[in-house]
Length: 154
Image (tube, helix red, strand yellow):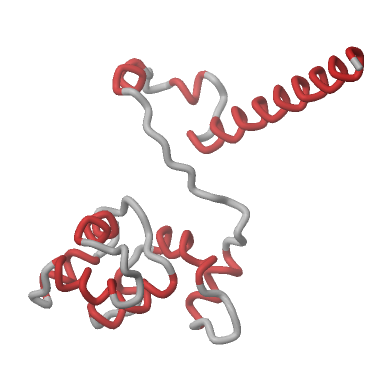
């Protein structure tokens, strides 16, 4: 989890003070957005991240974990990128994207602890990728079928 709140509190800053600085570059930012950043619900834009670094007097490497920075690499990889960020980009090319969604509690509570192992999945990411591949195959089949049906009726 990021260290935004920890650093902000240690500097004696409030969320409204941070949001006021962010409003200078993004007028729609409010205290709720700062809270979502601190709780890891969403990530700042490149411009907002620069302001956050300035306000909190810390680099993004001190504020975010490696995984969070991995999600941010699309923001700022270029000739002027710091060495650490270029290394992150080389280590993990942008071939993975985080997809977040909610699952109803009764479903989560019904999941047996050995579900993935028994079903031969290494991780939830592995299972999710398999589901998306099946969905894409189903989509292609249905698309092909509807195209043939339209051609038959014309």
